[in-house]
Image (tube, rainbow, N blue to C red):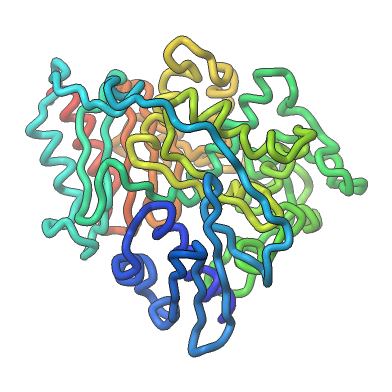
Length: 423
């Protein structure tokens, strides 16, 4: 566990500093405050673009920053030397959001802006620090218009924030892009070359709905499949895909970050050149949506860590939600088929209406009793959420460090809906 702790701290410090541009002091104070992370000692090398972390002088771990790929946690030295060059982002500052970064100051008819401001203020600590509720950002999009945004101290509209498991929904979307092109299908099986046993019958649908039957321990408090994969492995795909079946395929729902990284590996296998795989999220998703802040991070061997590591500004996360609200269409371009959007909202048979195709659901109000049942969302650790509510033409992004009782999503969402309904 010492090396898991130092690996987490090195990775977090590296990404938050070099990707998000935050100070070491704020990262240590806010993101590495719990034990034993608060006992780690971290050194940032601004010239070598790397971070080294130890715990009581032991279990040294190093993360290195790579342009366009974020930070990579090394297992020893960098044996793969993965890199990615991308064209410069187009200048969209003069265009109105969501096509650009200019905020539309025109009020949307029917919205009670005073009530909306009160609803948003209610999920921030009054000091705008990370004290109790620990919200960092809220963005509200109604009828394709960004109608409200608010940020905690130290954050603004240009600060990239880690989505954690919201990255799973990104990876599913990338699979959806290839499905639209006819290159992949939900019924595809024989997905991994060495799955020559019963695992060969696992379909892409089984993986995306978390019903593959594969073993995976999703536990971050001890040495587990999850912590070994993220903090002790050069190749996260191989680490997850080597695990055996423990349930009949399709019979058991079990949330698994390993599953999402297997999907990332399946995505990689669709490309003859590694560079094409690395460029694919940018060429086919981020650039068309204008999500120019988005950075997906890799393991040492060059797999996108589809379970956990995508950074983007809150308003860019909102663009991702807006893509789904508009049924896969972006400014006239069909990024993913409407059928893929529908699949994302289709409950896995054993999830009790909670989970679809790498998105969380609210079927029969199973998660939020006072919010429309058609809500679905990309969710991430510590309270990262992109809520999509089609019946209200609404996308709500909330990002922070607390997803417990201090942040009551049901009350917050109900208040936002009341405000846009003018009630």
